[in-house]
Amino acid sequence: MLEQPSSSFLTACLLFVAASLPAIIIYRLFLIYRKRMDEVCTTIIPEVNTITTPYKSQKIIKKDELELQKPTPVPVKDEVKITQETPQTVSKSFKLSSGVRYVPKDGNRTGYNNPNRPNAGEDAFFVYNNNDVGSRLVGALGVADGVGGYGELGVDAGLMAWQMMENSVENFKLVGSRELYRTPREILHRSYEKIVNEKQVECGGTTACLVSIFKDATTDNMFLNYSNLGDSGFLLVRNGEVVFRTVDQTHYFNAPYQLAIPPKGRVVLMNDPNESDTLYEEDLITVKEGDYIILATDGMWDNVFDEDVVEVLQKNIIQHGSDIEKIVDSTSEELLSKTYAISVNTPSPTLTPFQRYAQQFRRNWVGGKVDDITLVVACISIKE
Image 1 (cartoon, one colour):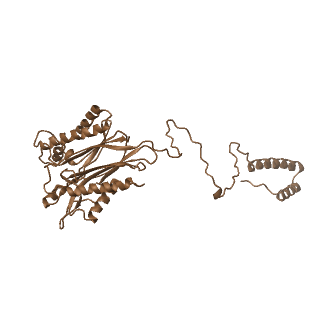
Image 2 (spheres, one colour; image 1 turned 180 degrees about the vertical axis):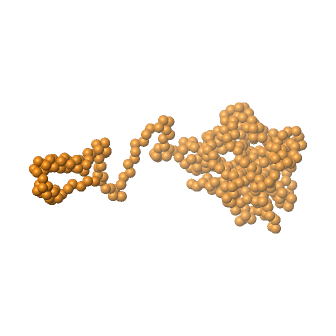
Image 3 (cartoon, helix red, strand yellow; image 1 turned 90 degrees about the horizontal axis):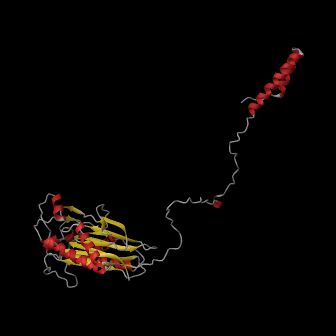
């Protein structure tokens, strides 16, 4: 940037020139000097750009005085608004309407009968409806399949299955009577620990599938939580469609995951429900009033395809209309009859799920598979 010459310097220059040049020349030089000074001043002080927004001083705000300014929300089409108002009161009370059927594969278990338990062979089950209105837990279902190999050791293979189910019901009742919630996986773990710690069973093994239904804390929304270990499982049916199905967990062909207490000196394939095993199946699913749950041991799933189960259910829904109690009872009865007829018809040309499963392992199997059969058909309905 050019700097303006000082007045003393200019005066000295003029005195020097005045002493050596004529007056006319001095005058002309003075005019040139004035013109040059005007140009220099123009360069030093540029014009202000009027487009630039002028800077405004800001008030210094202390940290404890800072207030967040909330922007005005922009309306969105079909926007779902979530209010922060007082939670609405739950207006509906739900229950599990259920029908249960079972049959042992070989009649009575000679020497192992317990008059206090249903004769389901080596299978076991429970249905629990929570009557505590203030609890979020609606109810729970469970099936278990005792591992038959223990029968060869002179052990009641069904004892482990029944003990797991009875302990699970006790744990669900504790959940239903308090303001707390435990997942079916936690229930399985506590039930298994009780068997081990209290020595309720000397040895044995079982598969297990637990399902619980609970309400949202502030609305009528409901959720299904389940844990499945082994090859029992369930279907969730809504409006004639299967919206969810469990997946079997097996170590290899016909060797399902199990909870077990092995005989002394022996090692068995077992799985503690507290282990973080990626193959252990559990999930949380949104459910609705009118959804059907078909829960069963492998005695049914090995003999009847899912689409056949849904077909039987839909036929009974059409036949009995809004009578849910009749629907679940007649559906469970028909499914048991259908499953049993297929299971004992072996070998036969009838294609079965177990036959298809065996073919994947290059096993020669034709027709049904004889086994204990236990099934529960349940519907989420309004409690009257």
